[in-house]
Image (cartoon, rainbow, N blue to C red; front, side, top):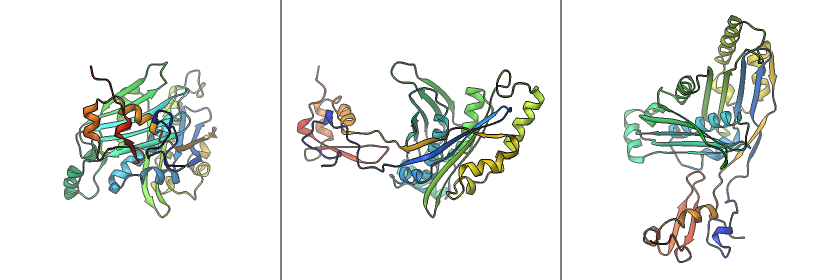
Length: 324
Protein backbone atom coordinates (compact mmCIF):
# COMPACT_ATOMS: atom_id res chain seq x y z
CA UNK A 1 0.00 0.00 0.00
CA UNK A 2 1.39 3.39 -0.95
CA UNK A 3 2.01 6.12 1.60
CA UNK A 4 -0.94 8.52 2.08
CA UNK A 5 1.55 11.35 1.61
CA UNK A 6 2.16 10.33 -2.02
CA UNK A 7 -0.19 10.58 -5.02
CA UNK A 8 -2.13 7.37 -5.64
CA UNK A 9 -5.00 6.03 -7.70
CA UNK A 10 -7.42 6.71 -4.83
CA UNK A 11 -9.14 10.08 -5.36
CA UNK A 12 -7.77 12.59 -2.86
CA UNK A 13 -11.20 13.47 -1.49
CA UNK A 14 -11.66 9.79 -0.51
CA UNK A 15 -8.20 9.21 0.94
CA UNK A 16 -8.53 9.62 4.70
CA UNK A 17 -5.70 7.24 5.58
CA UNK A 18 -3.61 8.30 8.55
CA UNK A 19 -0.08 9.24 7.53
CA UNK A 20 2.89 7.22 8.87
CA UNK A 21 3.10 8.80 12.34
CA UNK A 22 3.41 7.11 15.77
CA UNK A 23 0.35 5.13 16.88
CA UNK A 24 0.97 5.96 20.53
CA UNK A 25 -1.37 6.03 23.53
CA UNK A 26 -0.52 6.87 27.15
CA UNK A 27 -3.34 5.15 29.11
CA UNK A 28 -3.05 7.30 32.27
CA UNK A 29 -1.85 10.54 30.73
CA UNK A 30 -4.17 12.70 32.86
CA UNK A 31 -5.03 11.85 36.45
CA UNK A 32 -7.88 14.02 37.80
CA UNK A 33 -8.27 14.25 41.58
CA UNK A 34 -9.92 16.24 44.36
CA UNK A 35 -9.50 16.71 48.08
CA UNK A 36 -12.38 15.39 50.18
CA UNK A 37 -14.64 18.13 51.58
CA UNK A 38 -12.22 20.85 50.49
CA UNK A 39 -12.53 23.43 47.70
CA UNK A 40 -9.71 21.90 45.67
CA UNK A 41 -9.66 19.85 42.50
CA UNK A 42 -6.83 19.21 40.07
CA UNK A 43 -5.23 17.25 37.25
CA UNK A 44 -1.81 15.65 37.06
CA UNK A 45 -0.58 15.43 33.47
CA UNK A 46 2.34 13.26 32.41
CA UNK A 47 2.87 12.78 28.70
CA UNK A 48 5.57 10.11 29.04
CA UNK A 49 6.90 8.91 25.65
CA UNK A 50 4.12 10.85 23.90
CA UNK A 51 6.05 14.06 24.62
CA UNK A 52 9.09 12.82 22.71
CA UNK A 53 6.96 11.56 19.82
CA UNK A 54 5.24 14.94 19.45
CA UNK A 55 8.19 17.22 20.10
CA UNK A 56 10.79 15.53 17.91
CA UNK A 57 8.71 15.92 14.75
CA UNK A 58 10.49 19.26 14.41
CA UNK A 59 14.20 19.96 14.84
CA UNK A 60 13.93 22.97 17.14
CA UNK A 61 16.30 24.50 19.65
CA UNK A 62 15.77 23.05 23.17
CA UNK A 63 14.31 26.36 24.38
CA UNK A 64 11.60 26.19 21.70
CA UNK A 65 10.99 22.49 22.29
CA UNK A 66 10.62 23.12 26.03
CA UNK A 67 8.03 25.84 25.42
CA UNK A 68 6.07 23.58 23.04
CA UNK A 69 6.16 20.73 25.55
CA UNK A 70 4.83 22.90 28.35
CA UNK A 71 2.02 24.07 26.06
CA UNK A 72 1.10 20.47 25.23
CA UNK A 73 0.99 19.42 28.88
CA UNK A 74 -1.06 22.47 29.87
CA UNK A 75 -3.55 21.96 27.03
CA UNK A 76 -3.98 18.27 27.84
CA UNK A 77 -4.75 19.16 31.46
CA UNK A 78 -7.27 21.85 30.60
CA UNK A 79 -8.96 19.71 27.94
CA UNK A 80 -9.55 17.02 30.57
CA UNK A 81 -12.18 19.31 32.11
CA UNK A 82 -14.30 19.25 28.94
CA UNK A 83 -17.80 17.91 29.51
CA UNK A 84 -18.80 17.79 25.85
CA UNK A 85 -17.55 16.46 22.51
CA UNK A 86 -15.04 18.93 21.15
CA UNK A 87 -11.55 20.24 21.67
CA UNK A 88 -9.57 22.71 23.74
CA UNK A 89 -6.73 24.74 22.27
CA UNK A 90 -4.05 27.13 23.41
CA UNK A 91 -2.63 29.64 20.95
CA UNK A 92 0.03 32.28 21.53
CA UNK A 93 0.76 34.90 18.87
CA UNK A 94 3.49 37.43 19.47
CA UNK A 95 6.08 39.63 17.81
CA UNK A 96 9.03 37.63 19.17
CA UNK A 97 11.34 35.04 17.56
CA UNK A 98 8.60 32.40 18.07
CA UNK A 99 5.57 34.23 16.66
CA UNK A 100 3.27 31.19 16.80
CA UNK A 101 2.68 28.56 19.48
CA UNK A 102 -0.29 26.21 19.19
CA UNK A 103 -1.52 23.12 21.02
CA UNK A 104 -4.90 21.42 21.01
CA UNK A 105 -6.47 18.35 22.56
CA UNK A 106 -9.81 16.67 21.91
CA UNK A 107 -12.21 15.43 24.59
CA UNK A 108 -10.90 11.95 23.74
CA UNK A 109 -7.29 12.92 24.50
CA UNK A 110 -5.92 13.29 20.94
CA UNK A 111 -3.08 15.78 21.44
CA UNK A 112 -1.03 17.78 18.94
CA UNK A 113 0.90 21.03 18.76
CA UNK A 114 3.85 22.94 17.37
CA UNK A 115 5.94 26.06 17.82
CA UNK A 116 6.96 28.02 14.72
CA UNK A 117 10.24 29.91 15.19
CA UNK A 118 11.57 32.61 12.86
CA UNK A 119 15.07 31.28 12.11
CA UNK A 120 16.83 34.61 11.62
CA UNK A 121 15.30 36.35 14.63
CA UNK A 122 15.80 33.31 16.83
CA UNK A 123 19.49 33.12 15.89
CA UNK A 124 19.85 36.80 16.82
CA UNK A 125 18.22 36.14 20.19
CA UNK A 126 20.61 33.27 20.92
CA UNK A 127 23.52 35.66 20.47
CA UNK A 128 22.14 37.61 23.43
CA UNK A 129 21.18 34.70 25.71
CA UNK A 130 21.66 30.95 25.49
CA UNK A 131 18.41 29.91 27.20
CA UNK A 132 15.71 32.53 26.52
CA UNK A 133 12.51 32.63 28.56
CA UNK A 134 9.01 32.16 27.15
CA UNK A 135 8.54 35.93 27.34
CA UNK A 136 11.63 36.53 25.19
CA UNK A 137 10.59 33.83 22.72
CA UNK A 138 7.01 35.03 22.24
CA UNK A 139 7.43 38.79 22.66
CA UNK A 140 4.39 41.03 22.93
CA UNK A 141 1.09 39.64 21.78
CA UNK A 142 -1.83 37.61 23.06
CA UNK A 143 -2.67 34.25 24.54
CA UNK A 144 -5.96 32.62 23.48
CA UNK A 145 -7.73 29.69 25.13
CA UNK A 146 -10.51 28.23 22.98
CA UNK A 147 -13.22 25.64 23.64
CA UNK A 148 -14.64 24.29 20.38
CA UNK A 149 -17.90 22.45 21.08
CA UNK A 150 -18.48 21.35 17.50
CA UNK A 151 -20.34 22.85 14.52
CA UNK A 152 -23.69 23.03 16.34
CA UNK A 153 -22.40 25.13 19.25
CA UNK A 154 -20.70 28.50 19.59
CA UNK A 155 -17.01 28.51 20.40
CA UNK A 156 -15.90 29.98 23.70
CA UNK A 157 -12.65 31.91 23.63
CA UNK A 158 -10.73 33.83 26.26
CA UNK A 159 -7.95 36.17 25.13
CA UNK A 160 -5.42 37.99 27.28
CA UNK A 161 -2.21 39.89 26.63
CA UNK A 162 1.00 37.91 27.06
CA UNK A 163 2.20 38.83 30.56
CA UNK A 164 4.87 37.07 32.63
CA UNK A 165 8.27 35.50 32.03
CA UNK A 166 7.07 31.88 31.77
CA UNK A 167 4.10 30.07 30.26
CA UNK A 168 3.08 29.24 33.84
CA UNK A 169 2.93 32.94 34.72
CA UNK A 170 1.06 33.74 31.50
CA UNK A 171 -1.53 31.07 32.29
CA UNK A 172 -1.98 32.43 35.80
CA UNK A 173 -2.61 35.88 34.36
CA UNK A 174 -5.31 34.43 32.09
CA UNK A 175 -7.17 32.69 34.90
CA UNK A 176 -7.02 35.75 37.16
CA UNK A 177 -8.23 38.24 34.58
CA UNK A 178 -10.45 36.23 32.23
CA UNK A 179 -11.83 33.37 34.31
CA UNK A 180 -11.48 34.99 37.75
CA UNK A 181 -10.51 31.56 39.04
CA UNK A 182 -7.87 30.84 41.67
CA UNK A 183 -5.38 28.35 40.25
CA UNK A 184 -1.93 26.93 40.80
CA UNK A 185 -0.06 25.66 37.73
CA UNK A 186 3.29 23.87 37.55
CA UNK A 187 4.62 23.11 34.05
CA UNK A 188 7.78 21.21 33.17
CA UNK A 189 9.44 19.93 30.01
CA UNK A 190 13.01 18.67 29.64
CA UNK A 191 15.14 16.08 27.83
CA UNK A 192 15.79 12.89 29.81
CA UNK A 193 17.78 9.71 29.07
CA UNK A 194 14.52 8.26 27.70
CA UNK A 195 13.78 11.29 25.50
CA UNK A 196 11.79 14.48 25.98
CA UNK A 197 9.23 14.45 28.78
CA UNK A 198 6.54 16.99 29.70
CA UNK A 199 4.06 17.29 32.54
CA UNK A 200 1.76 19.61 34.45
CA UNK A 201 0.09 19.89 37.82
CA UNK A 202 -3.03 22.06 37.78
CA UNK A 203 -4.98 22.99 40.91
CA UNK A 204 -8.26 24.90 40.85
CA UNK A 205 -10.24 26.36 43.71
CA UNK A 206 -13.90 25.43 43.39
CA UNK A 207 -16.95 27.06 44.92
CA UNK A 208 -17.62 25.97 48.49
CA UNK A 209 -21.29 26.83 49.00
CA UNK A 210 -23.47 23.83 48.24
CA UNK A 211 -20.49 21.99 46.73
CA UNK A 212 -17.73 19.66 47.87
CA UNK A 213 -16.65 22.10 50.60
CA UNK A 214 -20.15 22.68 51.94
CA UNK A 215 -20.09 23.08 55.70
CA UNK A 216 -16.72 24.84 55.77
CA UNK A 217 -16.75 28.51 56.64
CA UNK A 218 -14.92 31.01 54.43
CA UNK A 219 -11.83 31.11 56.63
CA UNK A 220 -11.51 27.32 56.66
CA UNK A 221 -11.89 27.21 52.87
CA UNK A 222 -9.18 29.85 52.45
CA UNK A 223 -6.86 27.87 54.72
CA UNK A 224 -7.55 24.60 52.86
CA UNK A 225 -6.69 26.27 49.56
CA UNK A 226 -3.50 27.84 50.92
CA UNK A 227 -2.40 24.48 52.31
CA UNK A 228 -3.00 22.70 49.00
CA UNK A 229 -1.03 25.33 47.09
CA UNK A 230 1.83 25.17 49.61
CA UNK A 231 2.02 21.40 49.24
CA UNK A 232 1.84 21.61 45.44
CA UNK A 233 4.71 24.11 45.48
CA UNK A 234 7.02 21.40 46.89
CA UNK A 235 6.77 19.45 43.63
CA UNK A 236 10.00 19.44 41.62
CA UNK A 237 10.41 19.23 37.84
CA UNK A 238 12.38 16.00 38.30
CA UNK A 239 9.47 14.38 40.14
CA UNK A 240 6.95 15.56 37.60
CA UNK A 241 8.98 14.12 34.69
CA UNK A 242 10.11 10.86 36.33
CA UNK A 243 8.68 7.87 34.41
CA UNK A 244 9.62 5.57 37.29
CA UNK A 245 7.41 7.46 39.75
CA UNK A 246 3.74 6.53 39.20
CA UNK A 247 1.34 9.45 39.15
CA UNK A 248 -0.79 8.00 41.94
CA UNK A 249 2.24 7.71 44.21
CA UNK A 250 3.33 11.26 43.39
CA UNK A 251 -0.10 12.65 44.29
CA UNK A 252 -0.12 10.69 47.56
CA UNK A 253 3.26 12.19 48.40
CA UNK A 254 1.75 15.62 48.01
CA UNK A 255 -1.78 15.33 49.34
CA UNK A 256 -2.27 12.07 51.27
CA UNK A 257 -2.95 13.94 54.52
CA UNK A 258 -5.45 16.28 52.83
CA UNK A 259 -8.07 13.67 51.91
CA UNK A 260 -6.81 12.88 48.40
CA UNK A 261 -9.38 11.17 46.14
CA UNK A 262 -8.38 9.97 42.68
CA UNK A 263 -10.90 10.22 39.87
CA UNK A 264 -10.94 8.22 36.64
CA UNK A 265 -7.71 8.60 34.67
CA UNK A 266 -7.83 9.71 31.03
CA UNK A 267 -5.73 8.51 28.12
CA UNK A 268 -3.72 10.75 25.82
CA UNK A 269 -2.72 9.87 22.26
CA UNK A 270 -0.77 11.14 19.28
CA UNK A 271 -3.45 13.33 17.79
CA UNK A 272 -2.45 14.84 14.45
CA UNK A 273 -5.57 14.71 12.29
CA UNK A 274 -4.11 15.54 8.89
CA UNK A 275 -5.00 13.54 5.76
CA UNK A 276 -4.83 13.87 1.99
CA UNK A 277 -8.58 14.52 1.92
CA UNK A 278 -8.28 17.45 4.33
CA UNK A 279 -5.36 19.05 2.49
CA UNK A 280 -6.89 18.39 -0.91
CA UNK A 281 -9.90 20.38 0.26
CA UNK A 282 -7.61 23.28 1.16
CA UNK A 283 -5.94 23.19 -2.25
CA UNK A 284 -9.29 23.16 -4.04
CA UNK A 285 -9.93 26.65 -2.68
CA UNK A 286 -7.02 28.17 -4.61
CA UNK A 287 -7.25 29.51 -8.14
CA UNK A 288 -5.36 28.03 -11.07
CA UNK A 289 -2.67 30.74 -11.05
CA UNK A 290 -1.92 30.18 -7.37
CA UNK A 291 -1.76 26.42 -7.86
CA UNK A 292 0.64 26.84 -10.77
CA UNK A 293 2.85 29.02 -8.58
CA UNK A 294 2.88 26.36 -5.83
CA UNK A 295 3.84 23.55 -8.20
CA UNK A 296 7.43 22.44 -8.69
CA UNK A 297 8.00 20.12 -11.64
CA UNK A 298 4.30 19.31 -11.73
CA UNK A 299 3.96 18.52 -8.02
CA UNK A 300 2.52 20.54 -5.15
CA UNK A 301 3.82 19.67 -1.67
CA UNK A 302 1.85 20.66 1.41
CA UNK A 303 3.48 20.12 4.79
CA UNK A 304 1.40 19.52 7.91
CA UNK A 305 2.70 21.90 10.56
CA UNK A 306 1.82 19.50 13.36
CA UNK A 307 3.43 16.25 12.21
CA UNK A 308 5.88 17.87 9.74
CA UNK A 309 5.01 15.47 6.93
CA UNK A 310 4.86 16.57 3.31
CA UNK A 311 1.86 15.50 1.19
CA UNK A 312 2.51 15.51 -2.57
CA UNK A 313 -0.23 16.24 -5.09
CA UNK A 314 -0.11 16.07 -8.90
CA UNK A 315 -0.85 19.57 -10.15
CA UNK A 316 -2.71 18.20 -13.19
CA UNK A 317 -5.23 16.44 -10.94
CA UNK A 318 -6.16 19.53 -8.87
CA UNK A 319 -8.89 21.57 -10.50
CA UNK A 320 -8.90 24.42 -7.98
CA UNK A 321 -11.53 27.07 -7.43
CA UNK A 322 -13.62 28.34 -10.32
CA UNK A 323 -12.59 31.79 -11.46
CA UNK A 324 -15.40 34.35 -11.51
